Every structure is written in structure tokens, then in C-alpha cells.
Length: 218
Ligand code: GRF
Image 1 (cartoon, helix red, strand yellow):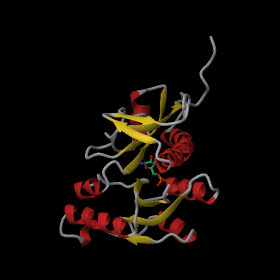
Image 2 (image 1 turned 135 degrees about the horizontal axis):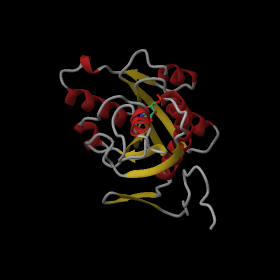
Image 3 (image 1 turned 30 degrees about the horizontal axis):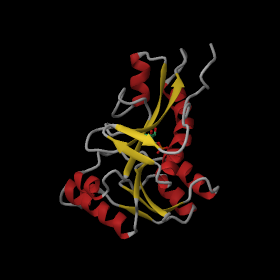
Image 4 (image 1 turned 120 degrees about the horizontal axis):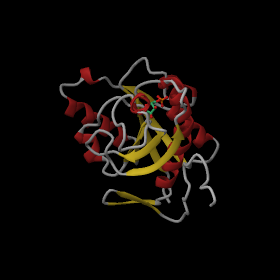
């Protein structure tokens, strides 16, 4: 099996990026992190890239004539580095068509809610405001919609009565850091296939993957 090259897109803190770096460094993920591309020169993700010897590029949309041009160029930079999977890790933009077309079925995102509930910004706050008792996080393939692509892995996380946006976000984040490396690993091992909206995982009983508790007995 070839060594998968990963390109990361991030806009901020980059804790998911860090969880992927850590998974590579401890040998859980057998992939190469080829480049971080960020739209934000102040992103802390850049420090993480520097600390781990990963190339980074700052590419700001306003440097480009159009949104199309911007994503065309991102696609070109990824291709040039032989990236086989693009990983969105807190990238605060909707991915443009040129990038999606250049990497069909090869772009993943993580969202801090159980999709299709609470897409878009502030998934954790939306869950609190709605009053759900269970929320969580979702890794999914990216299509042209906002958080609409086929679901790869989800983790369920309980919402407590005394939760604030911060406390719920922190509880969810701990699960994000588990399921994102797991989804990338399944992809890198060629074990994910997409049938319509469903992502099928080959060769493993994943019953219970991501659940907060094992299924209770009768
Ligand atoms: C995470 O909550 C992720 O689910 C969402 O944006 C946030 C990014 O956090 N897409 P970080 O930059 O990875 O720490």
C-alpha cells in the first residue's frame, strides 16, 4: 500500500491538527503530513507545524482574484506535494469547487455536532440552545454543501444540565481528537468506500466506535 500524503487546511487553534500529528508520531497513523495551508497568518496551527517540521503556507483569499482562483491554487499546491487526502481541521470556509473536483472523495472534515443536526458555525451552542441530551462530533467526507457529505464516524457525547458552551465544547473536543485520527487511519488503509450517502468500513467490527459507553445489557 502506498504511503498516503496528507494536506491539512486549518484557520485557528489547530488542536485537531495536533491530534493527527501526535497519531503519526506515535505510529498509529502511517501517513505523511506534507503541508499545512492556512488562511490566517495568526493561526496557532502554524506553530504546531513549525514544531513538528511540517511545511506551512499562508494563503489568504484576498490575495486572489476570485474564490475559484483561491481554491484552484490550494488544489495545485496540494497536488504538487502529492497529497492524497485533504483534511479540514477547523478551516472556517466552505470549500470551493476546484478543490472538491481535484480531490473527489478525498477531503474530510470534522464537525462538533451529530450531523445532520446543527451544521454550520457554533454546533455546540446550537445543541445547547436546542436542549438535546446527546450531542457529539462527526467526521465526514466533504461535498459542496455545508457539512452535508457522507458520514464516516460519529461519537456521541452527553450534554449535562449545567453545561456551558465551553464545557460542552471541551467534552466534545476530546472525542474529536480520537475519531479524526481513526477516520484518517481507515482511509489510509483503503477501508472506506462510499455507497450513495453511506460510508462502508471494510474489515472491522466497528460496533460501538465512538460511542461514549458500550451498549448496556438488558
Ligand atoms: C473544532 O471544534 C472542529 O470540530 C471545528 O472547528 C474546531 C477546530 O478546533 N470544525 P481546532 O482548531 O482543531 O482546535
